[in-house]
Length: 437
Image 1 (cartoon, rainbow, N blue to C red):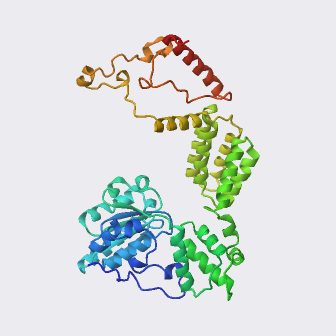
Image 2 (spheres, rainbow, N blue to C red; image 1 turned 60 degrees about the vertical axis):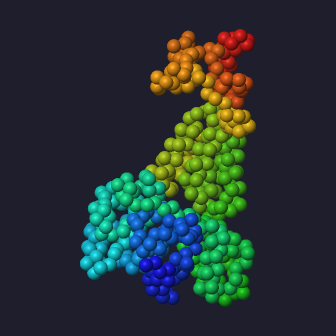
Image 3 (cartoon, rainbow, N blue to C red; image 1 turned 90 degrees about the vertical axis):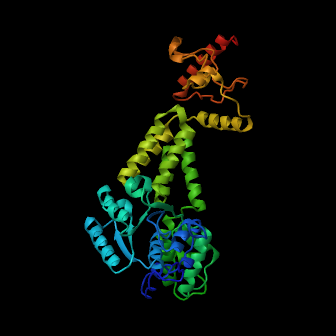
């Protein structure tokens, strides 16, 4: 029977970290994840049923994965067995099975919670399968990584994936007030509150640790202000402004330095971003955008090199992998620039939005069945490989009745010089074959 008032565990003592003291003991105390916990939503239904299903909780740090698993065990009156995958192995899995069997003998259900389940290898993950199948315990895994890649398909097929989101600024503000009350702390200035929420970046644990540090450092004061916050967090606060105005200004400066072919400025802004605590993976994604938007076909190698840099970072991590990002930044800055494809793409999208839905000409349609052939699908299509120079000169590949368009206009830089020459030759041949020249 569902009982939202059933505690998952006794409240920890005053010496415990604030994040542990404020860990929700009931579902109504949980802040955030309304898409899963509001009435009628998937996890709320699982709680209310009293018979929870096996699941994977996927989300960034500090969003409540462990808390929800504990609450689930408390409400279901189940034995709560925790395995930390970063330290655990098959021995821990066997011990968990033994505890679950003992609980079953005593008439209790069990929930086995595996924190950072993505750190278990395939064999370790497979060890859970027969026991999940037999119903010995409910499996709950927590991961910050995409389960599609990090959890093997057999285990994934037996568990429902629930995606947890970072806490919103409003939710963090609510948690901040709860923390201030628990610490009997003075109010915060508006600037300090905004800095704290930006610093937390959706992570409840990060926020609570910061608030606790601030209150203990400030002592007895009337208001907790921004200066006290900087003193309490110091380097950590300076280094992490993700999501704030400075963050977006800095990525803008990096992008413009690359576009402006200034490798020194681009390296400076890259270091500023990494020093500021920005996730290098985010930087890698931005480099891919720059390669596509600002370099394009003037140097197609730029996109490949950016992808390689992203992969190198994934393999090496920080700080070694950051050198690959620096190499990509310098290459992008020095590469010839073209936004011709970027403009062509936007123009084509705008045209399609404004234009009606034109039918595909019969000659361009595929004809895999006899009926389609009888309906003239594919009739009259000219196979380019059988034409002189591999070009069906004069053929039209746009819908019938649609005016000719020229979305793509190469620039006179890099490889696009040769592309422009080839495109001009093809357009002249087509015009001549159609009698337009």
